[in-house]
Length: 167
Image (cartoon, rainbow, N blue to C red; front, top):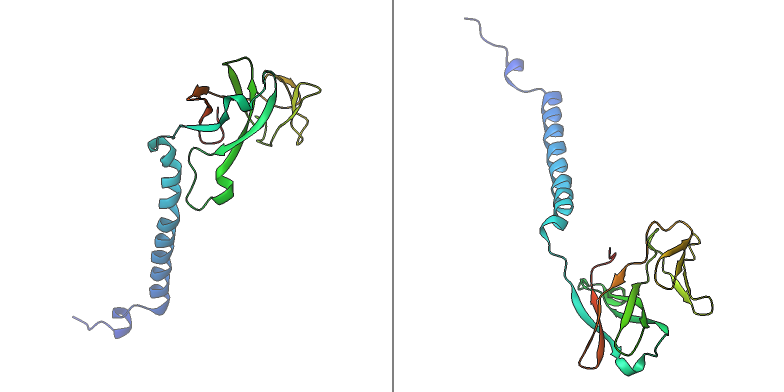
């Protein structure tokens, strides 16, 4: 039997660096992939909170008038600060009935504004127009303005919030 030359027993520098490169690439790939998969699967496993939020006393709202009300989002993050607040367009239809619309256009989520003289919701981003009942009048919005459930509880008007965007 012939002795094996020492150069064949010791790994070459090129082979070592090649294996190290593959190992580090695999590790980095796993570090990046695991959070992405977790993010994609989290909506399936997490129940979306829905919370009744008070927006004001009943006597603060005039029958037939649509006003902007501000409340805390259903799922605020601890570090959200001011951004945890959201809004809705609230109309008092009669003595006991209220209707609340989201302020977000169904096209791209831009904030719609209420124009009382025209009795229309207008989206400034791409010219979306909604009638006072939330149905699409003109422009690119694909569907009506989503509505929040509203109730009167202990003299307070409350909106059942949901994480944005509501559908």
